[in-house]
Amino acid sequence: MTVSSVGRRRFWPLTLIVGLVCFAVSWVAGGAALALVGRWLNIGQVPKATQYVLVLPGGSDTRPYVAAALLKAGFAQEALLLRCKPNSDDLAGAYPPSHEIERRVLVARGVSPERIHVLETQTVTTFSDAECLRTFLTEQSSQTATVVTNDFHTRRARFSFHLAFGKQVDQLHFVSAPTDCYSAANWWRHKRGLAVYGGEFLKLTFYWFRYGWGWIWLAGGGGVIALVRWGGRVRRPRALTKLGHVSIVDG
Image (cartoon, rainbow, N blue to C red; front, side, top):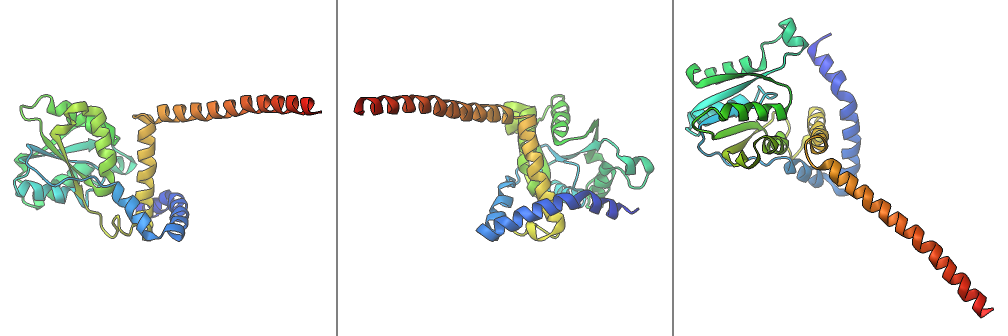
């Protein structure tokens, strides 16, 4: 079984579901609505000077190239890479670790190896990426960093880093890297785009409930609905009683 076939089996259910939803939305509101939804995920900023540039794992075909461009343009002085928890392919030696691929890209794009640092802590989620960077920066004299990730991932990334850094999140800058073959303007027209953008919406929702205020809003909304229904049940018997009283008097 090839890696590509594994990927197809993994993503086809999500692709089918998201595809059907997108078809319904586009039928009602047109593609412009889906493009607007896709652009909502992107909250990337214009580059500015920071000490470090952090390449988030998960986009070795685009993110390290943007980081290299920032380093060469003087927007950052040193690159930071993260170690992902190894998966079955990594353990089998089928592919180099993601941080090694990113390191090779940076070097191939002209970044000196001395300017590249691989952080030791293994990460498994965007939130653990944020915690790893926070731990590293607390030990440094300069605590400014640019976080590079794909455009569709910037909103969830900033949400995660805000949870980890609190008010110090203002020391961070988020720069978007593009994706190949699809973008916010046409993601629903590509099978991979459907899987990636659909998965991102699901992950953002999960993060909102897991790390944010989602459960509180859900509980509050449920409480309001319960009060409204209870109020309706209380008013209905009173109205019936009053109606019966009026009928007796009229009779």
